[in-house]
Image 1 (tube, rainbow, N blue to C red):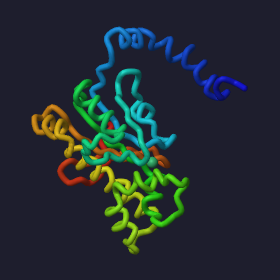
Image 2 (tube, helix red, strand yellow):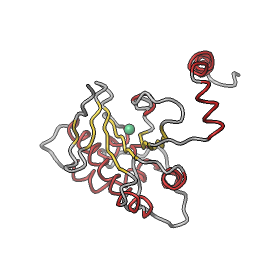
Image 3 (tube, rainbow, N blue to C red):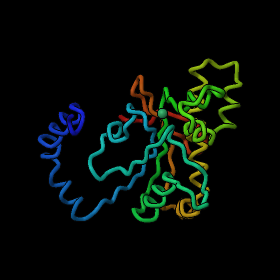
Length: 214
Ligand SMILES: [Zn+2]
């Protein structure tokens, strides 16, 4: 039985003899001085939407949190297990990131699940159902919009949920205070897996627009 799947061993061999060699100084300095990423990205677990790939980022550049459908729960200091809130707390209070980007994406399975309310859970725990219930009111409203196609409903909820998560970020006192002081900026982005297009949220209108990359 191999210690790791073959494709991971192959990938690691390519990394350690290629990219690691060319970036070894950077890795050594990051090891010595610690990480100081300016930007935190909250992205989906989806294998097609790695922020480091989309933003061509090297080691130490992005502090990345990934969860199903890139959702931020509201601030709930209730003593329960909150992995997303823990990562936020570390990024904001310890790393003092300047930006938080909530990045959604097209064809999101979590969003699709939220729109197909009543579908059987994947396991008795129904962890996805519980997690996606964070956006239940929006999901129910969008799902009831019979004027839209299935694809339009998915895109709409993918973008609505980004705005919802940004609103929830502001329920964290430390984030609200730093944003009000101008020390932290909250952003929304949406990545289209099929075309590679990146859309960014207009902070005034909440609409998504193509950023100028020329
Ligand atoms: Zn997704």
